[in-house]
Length: 255
Image (tube, rainbow, N blue to C red; front, side, top):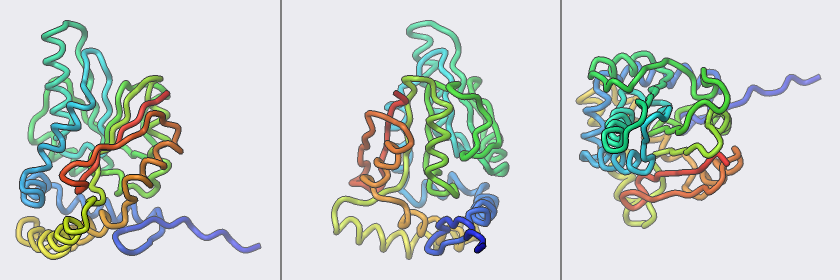
């Protein structure tokens, strides 16, 4: 009997054993953790902050909710959720919200803790493909710029659906496909030529940013990814293009 081939997963422009991708991605983020937030500002001209503001507003955190931010890294999104939930609590009353930041990479978590946290936030090292949470235990799930880094995107989506309560909200902020050809050409030129160079100057690691740019190009377009979200069991699936499709905010409901 012929032994079945091991599953593969894209790592930039090459395909690798899915188990190897986990190790390789961990190495990327070990390398860039200390400069991650500064590089985000430089790569996007600060526009990533507006994308994250839009994500937090769409999630609309409420008092008493449990919110899970997967691949939460240094806590950028989670801080926004915590502040919005606290503001809603001051206006309307209710119990404290709980915002869980989960990331596979301990160095990213450490960098986030070093930045300081809101009182609603807690930090967990964990795997998006095997979340350390019970079924139907969170009110909202988000993942920002992280799902393209997992070895099995479909499994990560199924895990998101598993941990959400009925009626729970799913949000995924991710780099996507610019809608205009001229924008795609300009974005490709910036991504492939400028970003690795900036990564070399600021983070001392151009190679990790070559991977990050390549991983964006390999990620499914908006329509294809929406189909993957539906296949994982979500309803009312849609997306909002940001900055002409440079990024997209995907959303769905656990119904």
